[in-house]
Amino acid sequence: CTMGDSSMTLYRWITLLRIAVRSLLQQKLRSFLSVLGVVCGVMAVVAMISIGEGAKKETLNEIEQLGTKNIYIKAVALSEDQVALAREHLSKGLNTSDMRRIVKGATMIERAACLRGLQTAILGLARRISPQVVACSAGYAEVQRIHISSGRFIAAQDQQKKNLVCVLGSDIAQSLGDAGAPGEFIRIGPHLFKVVGVLSRVERQTGRHSTVSVRNYNEMAFIPLETAPSLVQVKTDAPAHLLTAHQLSEIVVQVGRTRDVQAAAALVKRIMQVAHHDTPDYQLLVPLELLKQAERTQRTFNLVLGAIAGISLLVGGIGIMNIMLATVSERTREIGIRRAVGATRGHIMLHFLVESVFLTIAGGIIGLLCGLGAVEIISSLAGWTVVVSFWSAFLPLQIAFMVGIFFGLYPARQAAKVDPIVALRHE
Image 1: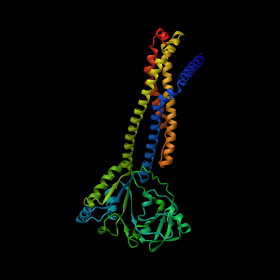
Image 2: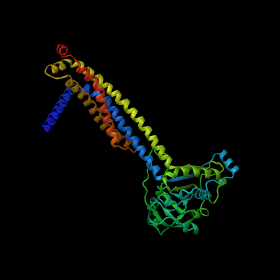
Image 3: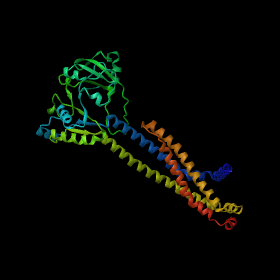
Image 4: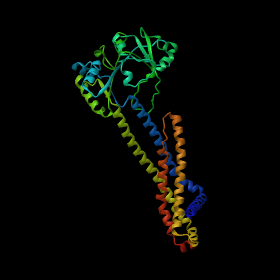
């Protein structure tokens, strides 16, 4: 008996939907124009959410590549006034002494490494490669989670003995061919270096929306830090009068626990301020703070998108309500006939409500398909990363359904209130 009742109810709903569709198809142009606002609103929402999610993914991936437990201290260029201040305070710029102070003063720091850029060339590379030669400490690969494809990374013994060894990025090793394999020798500047390792290829996330700069390890060559001073001229952002044999481009420290990162960053900032006498010749970068800021920005962006979606669909809903009110006026005699053959006010109200919801759902589906097409076109033409998530597709359809109920309810009530006797007399 229960199954029979369910089948009958389903049959009634299918019949009601069929009648509603037939009524709407009698005025195809009017029905299409009534849902056009919903189509445009849903299409815009799908496209904007997908582009926003793509931008979010690029930014978060780059920040996570820096390491959420890491803190970066980078050398920066100084203005003329800042150079004068540095001379006055005898600041030597970012150097190895800073790293020792930080490790000694901040107990929550687990590892530390440093790096500096070198102005030199690698002989035998293809022109498409733009190599960056850097000198680094032995722990740099561990702090930055750099993986070795073959051989090994710079070791502490290489630093102590100032060995002429190097580790190559995957693109450099590939460009050099057999000469880029571990055990071979390559010329960097005026000296021959023995290749002791090749890095695994790193897939970089370098989108248009990125807010941070991630090093391209595929086109980098690493040598021991202590080998650099007697080898080539140091390339750094510090002023020339402050260059020393211990000048650095970057210090990276890794905190043991994520919850200690902010406290460690505050301590590192204070240590650097004291050591450099408040001279702004360095920049502190905390990826965890950037990550939280990016997430806050994305939440705000989502709220803005929600407001835009609401306004777009509101306009579409008002259009549908106007059309339904006009339809009720035109179909007054039809309403009277249905009431005369036994239809109740609830039946009339439900019929017009189904028509309204069907219009918005149809508009939502068409808008979703157009939005997905627009996303593909934008991705192809602009080269942007777009992410079509479940919510970017489901949320607009859900809102369209609610709009259909909300804006269809009033016309449906007006139709249900029509007096059957007056309706039958209507011409």
